[in-house]
Length: 549
Ligand SMILES: [Zn+2]
Image (cartoon, rainbow, N blue to C red):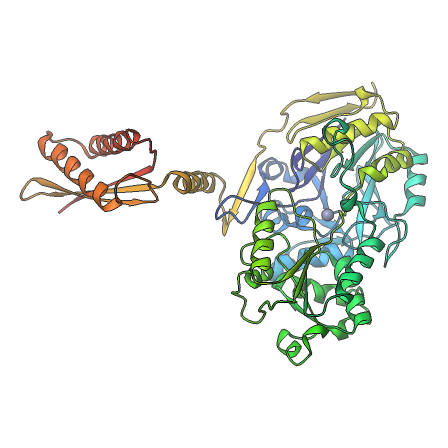
């Protein structure tokens, strides 16, 4: 029996984690994080508790490529579930760098495109997929019962600026050998009925087109150029260094993750002959402004990133001057659009010229990328993965266009289990078949339940304000004194006036009342305060403190 399910990545962009099971043995595919727009929450992770319980059944964790939404959960996962980690050289280098000194405690298996590996009952064959980071791999997984192809993230690239194009020959040969289930990237697929089909043509530029646009913009700049991209977008960084070389600009790099990844890319030979252009930001000062380029993190408007600090004028070394050009060369991840817009506004306010040049690293629907993949692999069944619901539904429509009957295409949610019985050649779906599917919140420390409560409280305080009531009993005199503090509560009168009125009301009520237990007093005070604010249409979070002196 084969089972397939996701603990993250279905109905959302991010925290990809898929699991394939054959006769009780599990192969985990990717282990990513998701960026969070919740205040104070660094990022989100899939709930690993199910895999923790089944640790001894897991044969390995395969990582398709080095983007954070595919590898960012690994340090947390390995703390709970100790399994061998498989991936390409670059992917593993990035994971090890995330793990720091802890990396040596774990087992890593480096795999290469064209290579294969047997982890019984799975036979794996790796295929290079073109994506916005080098060494992205798809994997063809064969078992005695069925074969599966997992694309990871991919786009179809015929003539890339550097590196190899998509490996059509391997994909076609795997298609001829036979694919029962295709688990394929759905990003950018959208139901035709919503937008008229396909992503916008701008998102679908080829790498060559992006290169040319970047080169044109940089050549036309008379001041300093600042380009912001993902730290893991090594292809784009390669391109920028090539252009800097061509245009005679010196390059400085701002942002810790970018500096770290540049070192890794250089070590693995991805920046051959290009790194000599990279200097420190201080050294850049001695070069005329029109000979400068700064590559910075922060393309998603991340609060402490280099670009955000530059845009708000709080960066120590980099200040915007009129005539500077800022190019944001990355796609905003859903949920980050607001933060990116804020950065653009701040940059414009400082007098910068702002450009947006990006291209999706994922299949482009208007260029039939998903359709091409379906024709190459010819799967019997399609399971759209990696996408919000609109992408999964859009991908299912494309599957039907490729000739796969609707009943052989499965739209799953995280935690739904697809069960295949080879002897009967039968597929069934068990809704919510996995016990323990959810989201972990990472806020410095990893703590599921408490963190979830803390986030709820933060959101409540953020939207409705906070009232803290301190009631102090003078046990000698037998009377109560109340002190109320309000934060972020909107009232008609000043908060000092409202606090004072509340203090009197509460003191009168407490001093007139009979002796009560502390719990009852707390309930009484909280109820009184909530009611008071309810009458002026406010619902702040209320905290009661009782003291006896
Ligand atoms: Zn990716």
